[in-house]
Image: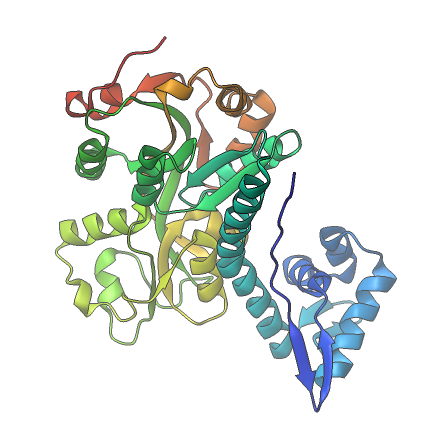
Length: 363
């Protein structure tokens, strides 16, 4: 079986001299930011102290300015150049990685189809989620996984077209969730779809550390001079945001940057962390991962959907079993703003969204 892996390559040219950036440098800089110590960075990047020191020193010399400042007794701090390089690396990873992974999946499928050999490949199209990433990590050791980041509505559409075996999407709690559920019910009407709750999670406003712009509500997004970063159309998070804005009576045209879009929660957080935006809407886990502030506005449940005809398919059963494993559930519970669905059962779509999307009942 052929497997395709696509990655972004940085080629940095300084005065005619070109070098390929070592991805390990970004990991080291991230560890330095988190711990304030080079020793802490080595554990994050899984390299020796000597290698981390030489990596930072060599790239500082090549770029023409130090990436860190090391002071006796006060730890190590990133310079403005080091901060900017770290931000750029995180943005590349959070923005391009999902797209490259999706393309790699398309190419892998196409090449293996041409050879008539695609055994065991499991296609999952899912709204960006950290619990799904953990699940893919567990499944990847024993099964070939094609995971593509899609908006909730796009993921479900792919499932109904037969482009994937499992789709991941999310629904808000309370009145907002009832509005979103109607949209899902319309698409699932008459379809034989089953659902497994994966986790509950928290969404809200991602802001800079300390919330210097004092962003505390949806109304604050319309403040003069505030820069907002949005999620893409077709995503469940974008739909949730629009429901919240409507409920608050906020004109979308009054929000600077509303038309600027990213396709993952991490990409939104990376832009806020890099001071390219003052606020975004997304998961608490993304805000914590980038050491940012967070204003909780909504809670929601994340589901995995699959066709009832695939219920007994080995690959789908593997996903269900792994999603119920205590070790996995404990890791989900450890994610900021997450609560694992410990007692989740496979349910029909109609039992969750009502009779308007009636499906066949499965045990």
